[in-house]
Length: 451
Image 1 (cartoon, rainbow, N blue to C red):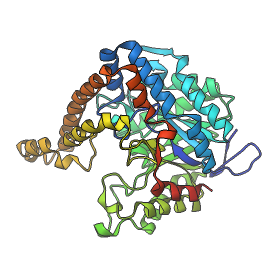
Image 2 (cartoon, rainbow, N blue to C red):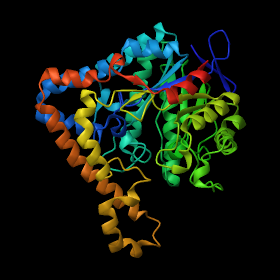
Image 3 (cartoon, helix red, strand yellow):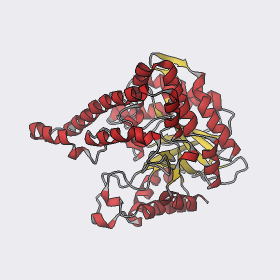
Image 4 (tube, one colour):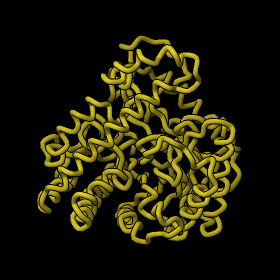
């Protein structure tokens, strides 16, 4: 079983074991930009069940889960030198909001299947709860339909979180292929009470896990979507590691270079050193749980995605950091392995991709300023709220994106529900490893730094 050893990880014999690999995004936690559907996972599931019925809906989801991750995928990752997979998952696999504290043992089925493959090919798994009861951030990527963050302020959701993690830890307490548990993804605790709540969630959940599992590493992610550690308590237990996400410059960092020059290596290094300062100070490991080849939507970083990725990996490795690239498999242009542009899935998704862009349904922060409807509305209200600390413009744009997404996922689910079983099987088969292609522009530098 892996252990924390100062700022590094070590195996059972004490040998240093840096964790280098991939996140397995949009499998057990769907993300719309990575699969091409509009809206949230829970609305997708809800509407498909409504229009397709339980038998067809269950058929679709089981085939998607089976086809998206196969032994061939894990064999490939092992062959290129990957030794860790970060597995994001939705809490709803184990617990329903209508029946809190009642746990579904079937939620482990595909997790166990993945872990079995990983054991065979020498790969560890970090379990990452990507969506939590009460929600840890406002994002669609936490399957949050409300935009409200209740986890850090309401005891009910905090109790559900720690008891659910205890249930999961009880299942995996003796599994050495599991490297550890990442308690929550991209927390966004804003204000003194929420920050206090975040730290309390960490302390209470670690305590609950340790009642059943004394051994596994527990990963705590920085606040503000994994970008800051200043508000976190100092390490308070054994076998703790910390995680951050790196998607380019922190918004508070003033950049002094022209757009066309791209991201220079010294600036990347300065930002990574800043992220790593908490871990260095407290002599604990830092894991870059997510990073990508460029910062999404920021044209300053798009001049040479291959070089930008190579620079990041070189810096991570030189500092002894562990890392998992975001993400392994997606639709085209989002992952290292993708379904093809002419696949049945992409043919189904194509018109919705156009509509998603038209209505800014994925709420890419770099695009909302050019949202057509938002641009029409903005002159009606903007001047009245210039002095407000509440980001009214961003809220309106997000609410518009949410409304359009909710409507489009309904249409998407209706179209899916019309298809016969064989066609649904062809759709999910688009993601089988043998039907996918590899994006070498990203895989080439990753392979180099995995070895």
